[in-house]
Length: 165
Image 1: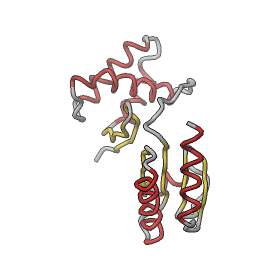
Image 2: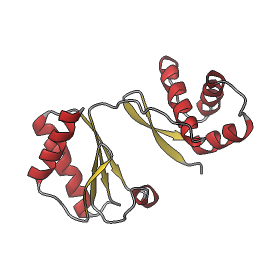
Image 3: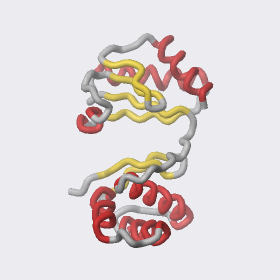
Protein backbone atom coordinates (compact mmCIF):
# COMPACT_ATOMS: atom_id res chain seq x y z
CA UNK A 1 0.00 0.00 0.00
CA UNK A 2 1.40 3.38 -0.99
CA UNK A 3 1.62 6.27 1.40
CA UNK A 4 -0.71 9.25 1.36
CA UNK A 5 0.86 12.66 1.88
CA UNK A 6 -1.18 15.76 2.65
CA UNK A 7 -0.23 18.91 0.78
CA UNK A 8 -1.86 22.27 0.24
CA UNK A 9 -3.29 22.70 -3.24
CA UNK A 10 -4.64 26.20 -3.56
CA UNK A 11 -6.78 26.76 -0.47
CA UNK A 12 -7.30 23.06 0.28
CA UNK A 13 -5.40 20.34 2.06
CA UNK A 14 -5.34 17.28 -0.21
CA UNK A 15 -4.07 13.73 0.28
CA UNK A 16 -1.83 12.55 -2.55
CA UNK A 17 -1.06 8.86 -3.08
CA UNK A 18 2.57 8.08 -3.92
CA UNK A 19 3.92 11.63 -3.63
CA UNK A 20 7.03 10.71 -1.64
CA UNK A 21 8.07 8.05 -4.15
CA UNK A 22 7.46 10.36 -7.10
CA UNK A 23 9.44 13.19 -5.51
CA UNK A 24 12.35 10.90 -4.66
CA UNK A 25 12.41 9.51 -8.20
CA UNK A 26 12.32 12.91 -9.84
CA UNK A 27 14.94 14.30 -7.44
CA UNK A 28 17.37 11.50 -8.22
CA UNK A 29 16.82 11.26 -11.98
CA UNK A 30 15.93 14.69 -13.34
CA UNK A 31 18.29 17.29 -11.89
CA UNK A 32 18.89 19.13 -15.20
CA UNK A 33 15.25 19.83 -16.02
CA UNK A 34 13.43 23.13 -15.78
CA UNK A 35 10.82 23.77 -13.10
CA UNK A 36 8.13 23.66 -15.77
CA UNK A 37 9.27 20.23 -16.95
CA UNK A 38 9.49 18.86 -13.41
CA UNK A 39 6.00 20.11 -12.57
CA UNK A 40 4.56 18.49 -15.70
CA UNK A 41 6.34 15.16 -15.03
CA UNK A 42 5.04 15.07 -11.46
CA UNK A 43 1.52 15.98 -12.57
CA UNK A 44 1.50 13.26 -15.23
CA UNK A 45 2.90 10.60 -12.89
CA UNK A 46 0.67 11.43 -9.93
CA UNK A 47 -2.45 11.74 -12.09
CA UNK A 48 -2.28 7.98 -12.66
CA UNK A 49 -3.08 7.22 -9.00
CA UNK A 50 -4.92 10.38 -7.93
CA UNK A 51 -8.00 12.06 -9.32
CA UNK A 52 -6.95 15.50 -10.54
CA UNK A 53 -9.63 17.59 -12.18
CA UNK A 54 -8.46 19.14 -15.46
CA UNK A 55 -9.56 22.60 -14.28
CA UNK A 56 -7.34 22.26 -11.20
CA UNK A 57 -4.29 20.75 -12.87
CA UNK A 58 -2.33 24.03 -12.81
CA UNK A 59 -2.83 24.32 -9.04
CA UNK A 60 -1.70 20.72 -8.55
CA UNK A 61 1.31 21.22 -10.78
CA UNK A 62 2.40 24.26 -8.74
CA UNK A 63 1.86 22.34 -5.49
CA UNK A 64 3.87 19.35 -6.73
CA UNK A 65 6.72 21.61 -7.83
CA UNK A 66 6.68 23.32 -4.42
CA UNK A 67 6.92 19.92 -2.69
CA UNK A 68 9.74 18.91 -5.06
CA UNK A 69 11.71 22.01 -4.16
CA UNK A 70 11.27 21.22 -0.46
CA UNK A 71 12.56 17.71 -1.14
CA UNK A 72 15.77 18.94 -2.75
CA UNK A 73 16.28 21.63 -0.12
CA UNK A 74 15.44 24.71 -2.15
CA UNK A 75 13.70 27.55 -0.33
CA UNK A 76 10.00 27.84 -1.09
CA UNK A 77 7.25 30.23 -0.18
CA UNK A 78 4.21 28.48 1.18
CA UNK A 79 0.94 29.52 -0.35
CA UNK A 80 -1.32 31.27 2.08
CA UNK A 81 -4.11 29.01 3.17
CA UNK A 82 -7.62 29.99 3.99
CA UNK A 83 -7.50 31.89 7.26
CA UNK A 84 -5.86 30.49 10.37
CA UNK A 85 -4.02 27.16 10.10
CA UNK A 86 -4.86 25.02 13.14
CA UNK A 87 -3.56 21.56 13.94
CA UNK A 88 -4.74 19.42 16.84
CA UNK A 89 -2.11 16.80 17.58
CA UNK A 90 -3.16 13.53 19.19
CA UNK A 91 -3.97 9.97 18.26
CA UNK A 92 -7.65 10.24 19.10
CA UNK A 93 -7.96 10.05 22.88
CA UNK A 94 -10.96 11.72 24.48
CA UNK A 95 -8.94 14.85 25.38
CA UNK A 96 -7.72 15.16 21.79
CA UNK A 97 -11.27 14.85 20.50
CA UNK A 98 -12.48 17.40 23.08
CA UNK A 99 -9.78 19.85 21.94
CA UNK A 100 -10.87 19.44 18.33
CA UNK A 101 -14.51 20.07 19.29
CA UNK A 102 -13.56 23.17 21.30
CA UNK A 103 -11.54 24.56 18.40
CA UNK A 104 -14.44 23.96 16.01
CA UNK A 105 -16.85 25.62 18.46
CA UNK A 106 -14.62 28.71 18.71
CA UNK A 107 -14.41 28.95 14.93
CA UNK A 108 -18.19 28.66 14.64
CA UNK A 109 -18.75 31.29 17.35
CA UNK A 110 -16.27 33.81 16.00
CA UNK A 111 -16.72 33.23 12.28
CA UNK A 112 -12.95 33.31 11.82
CA UNK A 113 -11.96 31.45 8.64
CA UNK A 114 -9.66 28.56 9.52
CA UNK A 115 -8.41 25.23 8.31
CA UNK A 116 -8.46 22.65 11.11
CA UNK A 117 -6.56 19.38 10.82
CA UNK A 118 -6.51 16.66 13.46
CA UNK A 119 -3.08 15.02 13.11
CA UNK A 120 -3.20 11.46 14.43
CA UNK A 121 -0.05 9.99 12.89
CA UNK A 122 2.59 9.63 15.63
CA UNK A 123 5.48 10.22 13.20
CA UNK A 124 3.91 13.48 12.02
CA UNK A 125 3.25 14.52 15.63
CA UNK A 126 6.89 13.82 16.50
CA UNK A 127 8.02 16.23 13.77
CA UNK A 128 6.82 19.03 16.04
CA UNK A 129 9.54 18.01 18.53
CA UNK A 130 7.44 16.56 21.33
CA UNK A 131 5.00 13.77 22.03
CA UNK A 132 2.76 15.37 24.65
CA UNK A 133 -0.86 15.26 23.54
CA UNK A 134 -3.27 16.79 23.11
CA UNK A 135 -1.39 19.64 21.53
CA UNK A 136 -2.61 22.71 19.71
CA UNK A 137 -0.58 24.30 16.91
CA UNK A 138 -1.81 27.57 15.41
CA UNK A 139 -0.08 29.00 12.34
CA UNK A 140 2.94 26.80 13.07
CA UNK A 141 3.30 27.81 16.72
CA UNK A 142 2.72 25.32 19.52
CA UNK A 143 0.23 26.95 21.87
CA UNK A 144 -0.32 24.07 24.30
CA UNK A 145 0.88 20.52 24.83
CA UNK A 146 -0.19 17.84 27.26
CA UNK A 147 -3.20 19.74 28.59
CA UNK A 148 -6.68 20.70 27.44
CA UNK A 149 -6.60 24.51 27.52
CA UNK A 150 -9.72 26.46 28.53
CA UNK A 151 -12.01 27.41 25.67
CA UNK A 152 -11.48 31.13 26.43
CA UNK A 153 -7.73 30.71 25.95
CA UNK A 154 -8.24 28.85 22.66
CA UNK A 155 -10.50 31.68 21.50
CA UNK A 156 -7.84 34.28 22.39
CA UNK A 157 -5.13 32.38 20.51
CA UNK A 158 -7.28 31.97 17.39
CA UNK A 159 -8.32 35.64 17.42
CA UNK A 160 -4.69 36.74 17.81
CA UNK A 161 -3.66 34.52 14.90
CA UNK A 162 -6.47 35.89 12.73
CA UNK A 163 -5.40 39.46 13.50
CA UNK A 164 -1.81 38.70 12.46
CA UNK A 165 -2.85 37.49 8.98
